[in-house]
Length: 305
Image 1 (spheres, rainbow, N blue to C red):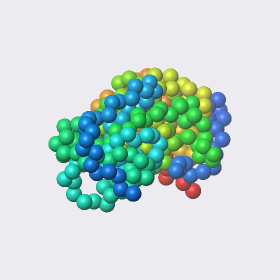
Image 2 (image 1 turned 90 degrees about the vertical axis):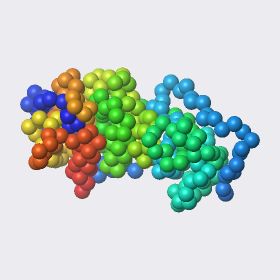
Image 3 (image 1 turned 180 degrees about the vertical axis):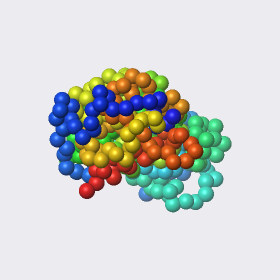
Image 4 (image 1 turned 30 degrees about the vertical axis):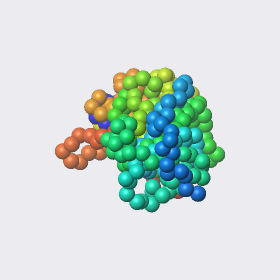
């Protein structure tokens, strides 16, 4: 199930309103919210996809497809964009004009190429006539995600075994909107940033801090030491997501599992609290991106004054 694996619950009967060791972590105040035209030709050079970087600590994301994703990458300016391809027969659109203007300001070469070339190179279903080649996304430092940012406590989302790039991208878009301060991905058995994920995220990957950890159970132990509450979603949990209340104002990490099997047993057993999303219809669960949207916005709702 997208909300989590089979039945979970509060670890050791702990009440969410209490801190570890009988003391409630001191909540910090805050809402929890984070936040010349280029050459059109260039025909003399060979139009081949630039080679990928061999950066060891990167999330991927060297090839970005889709208009909004590329536009946001240029706006964010967090990484070097090597080259942008635009289909020569592309229809006029404001977002395409924006891409050309932003690329010119950043001195990024834009090449008009045949649509067939773009379709052959694309790795997502609908590149929308635009592909960009950039330096890979850099991983965030996991330990830095556990530290408050000014008056904003950590608001993290961790994924356990999510392998569908479309779901990852949609979820990252929700995380950006809800003010998530960091996303945690396991190194293995988890999708990272592919062209499909980047396109579905619609530019959110350019604004989020994303860390990769060797294993989620070990990362959860480190979160516990940093006094970050871990909240797992499980469709069979007794406590409702909508009962989180003031706990949302503390440092928290929402953990989402893969569709079908949900969070793994080891991860579920290490959660401080396991909650479910009430389902009043005939279906028993939501997909991971929908469940993640509800969970992150419920945290945001409780964090706002």
